[in-house]
Amino acid sequence: MSSTTDRPGGSEDPFAVAEALQSVVRDTAAIDRDRPVIAPAEPVERPTEAIGADGDRQHDTVVVDDAMLGRRETVRVPIQRRPPRGRRAPLLVAVLFATLWAALLGYLPVAVVIGLARTLEGSAGLAGAAHAGLAGWLLGHGVPIGTSIGPLALTPLLLTVFMIWRLNRAGLHVTRAIGARHSGSAGRALLVALLVASAYALVGALAAVLVDGRGTDVTVGRTAAHFLILGFSGALLGALRGTGAVATLARRAPQAMRHGIRAGLVAALLILGAGAVAGGLAVALGGAQAADIIAGYQTGVAGQAGITLVSIGYAVNVAIWAAAYLLGPGFALGVGTTVRLTEVTVGATPMVPLVAGLPEGPMGTRGTLLLALPVIAAAIAGWALTQRLRFGRDNAWRASGAGPAGTEPAWSMVLAPALFAGPVAGLVLGLLAWLSGGSLGSGRLSRIGPDPVQTGVMTAIVVAVAVGIGAAATRAFTKRPGKGRATPRR
Image (tube, rainbow, N blue to C red; front, side, top):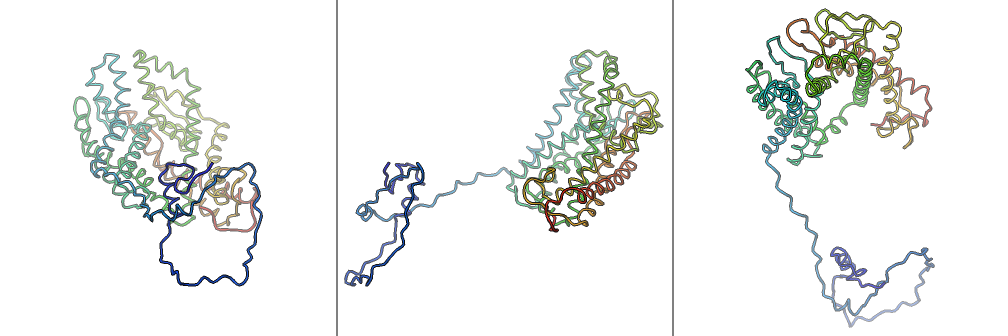
């Protein structure tokens, strides 16, 4: 198939035509016709080589017409222009829209769950359902709701996690709207977080004004403070991700600290996962008791569905309580009660499905085996620490270390992060234990949840020892991928 240089392959693509024109356009210069032409004294020998056939590959034949090229006018190839950038939304508009959207998506599921049960059972109309849903939404932010039986201050942390995720998305969207994505600027991330948190605090204050009264007592100032803290935390996560400031800050931190923080977070999440598995298994084994509790409400299908969904909202709380139970401190289900591996002292428990998984007494020998679960979880985090130091982030969780050749980390880079991981995990689980507790009234159920100090201290000890053992054992006894030592990978 033949073609010319101005239309390669008969193409109509303007970029292909421009590239072809660039190859033939030359600057013109005057030729001195009186200058004699000097022929070379001896023929110039040039090495030649045979061009072999490239299989069945075919090449287009290009016909070059010197006469036609000589008559062609010299043209200037225009530079491709970039499309004009669209106008970005003003910062305040982006903040208000993202914040209101996050608040709306957080409130609607709560209103639907509570409203479904109340409306279909004839307890109240839509206005009452909306009011109760708004109160439940405030409770998900940790705001105590005053009632006739006392304050309701047991936060459903699953709703809290959902709201943090929505605020994280709001911070990310505002970061994109102001053109700060991948800028690496921590200052712009803080600005986005502060603006989103301020707008979210205003939303919380308005919700508190609407809920206050009609059988509920809510403090507007405290509500605004809770919304401000939660809004700042969630939006900051999204803004830091959007700007890429996390990587910038991580590069400035010492390597031992960076790896220790990561190992502590991994260990805390693994222990929390072990608690979630243990708690879910206990509730599943007590399924018959849970079904009897739900049936005892005599609220019909809609009411039973509402009770079940409300119980699911406290699933994260139960996972934290189960993790404290496995670590040793245990938790309380009322004043003067204790639920731990070696002691179970409970009186009349609240009639909710989650209490179906409570142990009936001390675990004895089986309790010793359960105590090993947090140790194993932290040891896995130690194994991952050494693997990351050897093979880098992408291959840390591969037992064979497939990928780039690994290097043996120094003992100081194995033990120092392990010791640092203990306090990090202790702070995380201690904070979660504090957030998961609360009260259901001012009577016997005024103290529910684990002790945050005991949980944090025990977690720090277990993680520091187990991560150190897991990391050191991996360093000493597993197959070494390479000889010598090198700088640890990030």
